[in-house]
Length: 381
Image 1 (tube, rainbow, N blue to C red):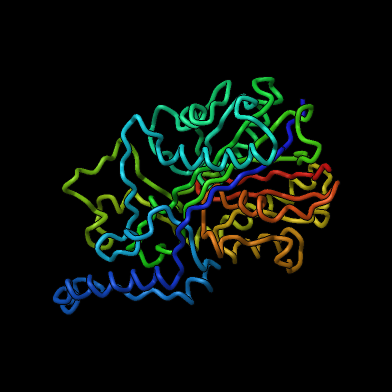
Image 2: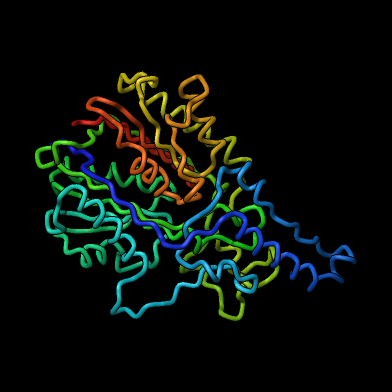
């Protein structure tokens, strides 16, 4: 059996935050913090918080705005974090809900009913709970058949999920598999950190993979794939059930750099990540092109992970040996910011409609782990 991509789906929150709005909120927080700690700052015991800058954010990252599930609390200098109300166990969890929304979009595009799906894989950076699996809840919400499970390879979860789904189909476990990527990235971002407060947004994507024998006439044949991991602490999130923070030690509302929950949020050494990940990903792509007898210049488009515009530009240049037009490596992070595993799928979802029969492209992810995944596809129409 051969697995192909039949359709993709996308769910986007209603609210968006511009760089200007985000910077205005952060700077108000910084001014308040500096005023409250004026004596210590004057004595040289603490460093003042510097202002953020909207223009710098765009220049450094390419990000102009981001969609969010909880806008007002993020922009409140007294909170500076999303506030998503807890739901009783009898109600769908927020992560399962947005995953199901993206899944329905993919099913509708493929003309499939939920009961046609034999497996659901929720692949994302941060799961809402340990168990029961979010994927099993999505299965229940949608009414799909078969089985479901969760997996996490950070920003590469979607590409790793695609390859896992391919294996399930080829192995005969299911003929139709939904891979869903619900990413509430703002929930693990420290909005009081000037160096990172602009990075993430929220979204959910879905990819429907099916056995070629039942797929729509128009689909995407997977013609090659490669998964790579290499351990690094340069991107890390320490949150977990073994390091619970007591309620009275609420580091999110403490001083910058104070341990507590701030130590359990997104952290990265950006310079090292850039230096180490770019050549790793470029080599993975070129090596896999050679292994599958694909000329990189025959790739009509590369749908790269949406973390940083400068990284994508350099990776594309290393692969093709020349400057690349934006149409060849489309950007969605200007509107969505970094949405972890969902980023390359958003790019694929929004910028693949012009492909004709036989056109080839690459879905590529990279991020914490380090992890990287490359899925080479060919349009069949």
